Length: 114
Image (cartoon, rainbow, N blue to C red):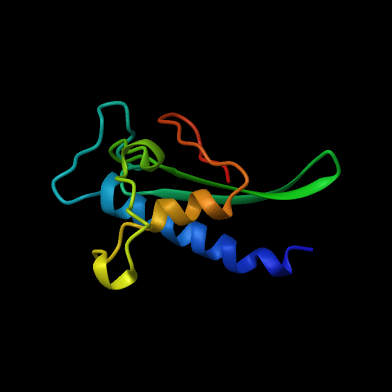
């Protein structure tokens, strides 16, 4: 049922995990006072099957206890009108996630679902 989508799921999850590592646990960042010491540096990744109007979905969530960063709001939007040769390397991760997910969101206090 999900065979054709596994590549898209892998791509989206990989891009979001890179964002967590790059921003939530960036060098020099420190945990917020409310973060338990044993959670700093941790990451939670989960999957579950869901169905809406008899349409199957795979929900993915990523949770971390690092510095807050909303990639859907804060990541710069890439200029996709440029050719690959004229663009800087990187910067397409969030754009790709937006294009392969049915729904995506960020919350500073709860998991992200795709």
